[in-house]
Picture 1 (tube, helix red, strand yellow):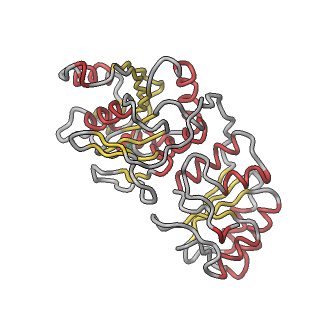
Picture 2 (spheres, rainbow, N blue to C red):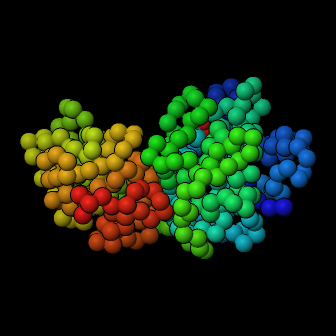
Length: 343
Ligand code: ASP
């Protein structure tokens, strides 16, 4: 029988209604034990639950929480066969992505899950999601990578997004097939597995304010561009462009400011605003100019994974060409391999 550890961090899954709205509840462990005790012991992996303090609404998450998770995993990595992280849904895709880059190759599954409706409320999805995550984390065929288990789907963590605010099928991976699906049985897909190895369980040095996101939109002004790109603390920028990776012209100001930024070492990653598909910077003249000035095509990476990848690489001390190389290639299956046009 597999032995797994559940790490409870907060989120709707374990929340209860207070006079001022939903807040994380401290007695979740007892309530979960009671809810799971109705099942015969041999149908679920053996589990223990550890509560991380402070319990948070994941909207309040900072990279310090990623280091807290890494430190907790470091203490117990050799003890259990798999790990489940109970997490708020709002930033779960960021945490799954960040952990995938922080940990690197894994020899055990790490499965995040949460819920749209708190445990104990009518139609709650909490228990089903937790049970799916537990079965995946304790399964001998589970992929040794960071996954999200939600609404009968097992998703690659750094490919996943919270796509729906209300639907119970809140998570999907629009640019990547599901790793598994639970019908009567949990079935794993035949997707080639990622490299297996001992994880890097060392903390990373995150600095607030080093990463920016520039969301291109009709009506943005050259002044706004200069203001954001001239920020001296900026080390990495996700440029959210139209379609296959096209930025607006802005009378040349965007390209000028981007060139100045890349020349002083800011890594700029081009990610499409479209939820599905990939960046191809050479399709239009506007995009091709980005390649010329050193903007890196983010291929089909999600915004969440792009931010997390930049954050982790910078926090691990990467810079210059090594940083650019790491951003140009998939590290943990987060994007498709480099397209010819973006070389
Ligand atoms: N705000 C909550 C959180 O992310 C939402 C949820 O868990 O579904 O913690």
